[in-house]
Amino acid sequence: MIETTLPEAAHISELRRQLRRFVNEKAPRDLRREWDKAHTFPRDVFRELTRMGVCGLTVPEAYGGLGQDIEAAVAVIEELSRAGPFLSGPYIHCAFYGGMNISENGSDEQKESLLPALARGDMFLAYGLSEPDVGGDLSSVRTRGRIEGDEIVINGSKRWCTGADWSDYIYCLINTAPDQPKRNALTFVLIPTRASGVSMTPIEHSNLRYTASCDVHFDDVRIPMSAIVGGPAMLNKGWSLLAGRALDVEKLEVAACTFGFAQAAVEEAWTYAQERVQFGKPIAGHQAVSHKLVTARTKLEACRHMLYHAARLAGAGSPCAIETSMAKLFIADVGVEIALACQQVMGAYALSDAYDMNRNVRDLLGMPIVGGSSDMQRNNLAGLWRLKG
Image (cartoon, rainbow, N blue to C red):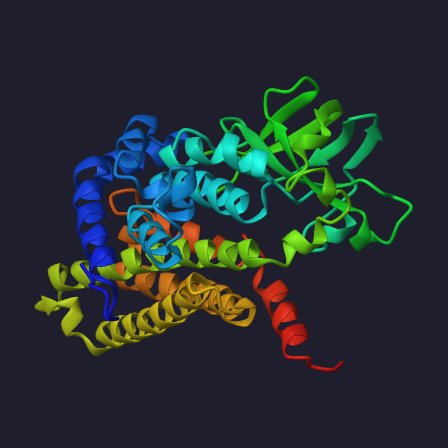
């Protein structure tokens, strides 16, 4: 197993050691293959994981968490993702979509009511951002929220709401002032997934198969004004939440998943190349193979530096929009290069379900798309660097 090459705090190293032992025992390859085929994650194993306290790494101690430790939480995602998305996916729904967002953006009432459960791992949130006709241009969302007294009545549809069918709330972006400029009309709300008027349709997809994604439809869904993220004072101020610290950490969580998948791909190809014998010697002894592996591992180490440099900035509360966008862009794009090189090393076996390579390649091919596409990151960076057009 490839070890971290960067200095890190002793508690993070110990956390890695415990997580590796846990994953080896609880998520062996045969079970990962079953979960992938079934499009699901193991609820019982995740419940055991939460007893380690890892869901509290994004929640302040005052609300039952361990205190925000972004670097440690990113390390959790990395280690879990080495075994695929089956534990890291639900962890993100709890600790990041939930714990991070509510800690950063929630009202006092929301923090008191939600954060203790999130810190324990007892609650999940799903994102309701994209729509059938809205992807990267989130300011153009068409899901409407009409104010009626002390309630918001919501109508519209969201697409790619991964995990909505088993989450407790949808962290949903809606338009609450259609007569205003788009960025002055956005509001984030917490919509209970079991609320009257909420319906869902699963979407089949080839990557990140720890769950189905969903189309979610809202038909006169009524929620109280207190369900506005940050409280009623944040009505029509949702754009500021799209550009805050929680979004920076969102880019890191996707990058950490990608890094974990890529690391697993390199480890598997590295081992395979020393066991597979052709032309009288292990294929790692053939220059064409060894060069692929050495290049892949070098790119992997560059990804590690990008990821943890940005994570440490975020953890220190330093400005890091540029670094998190660079990390998401670089690791996602380079992760695809690593995946394809490792697939070539393993040949036909990389296409079978006898190894993890098939799944890791599928997952890595999707990472330049999810969580803010690579081209959106380039747009972000061009703007942050004031590149004039």
